[in-house]
Length: 97
Image (tube, helix red, strand yellow):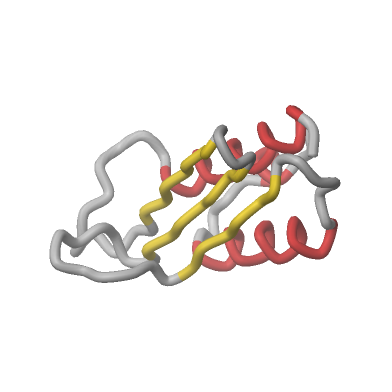
């Protein structure tokens, strides 16, 4: 994986989440991006209807191995899922950096 692919993953997450608070019951997806540099992993977690304090688990998690070549099928799945939970997700967010 290279830095441009990491930027693409993060750009899409930010386009879905935006910059405002995302607590339920807003019915808006909440996205977390976590990088674990010690193991070379980038995780994107999603709760589709907003963050709730008592909630356990996420609706979807994506784990990307930073030490390996990006698997196009994983990226395609990520992009399709993020677009499906955010109908107004602009094409610019889905463009390669």
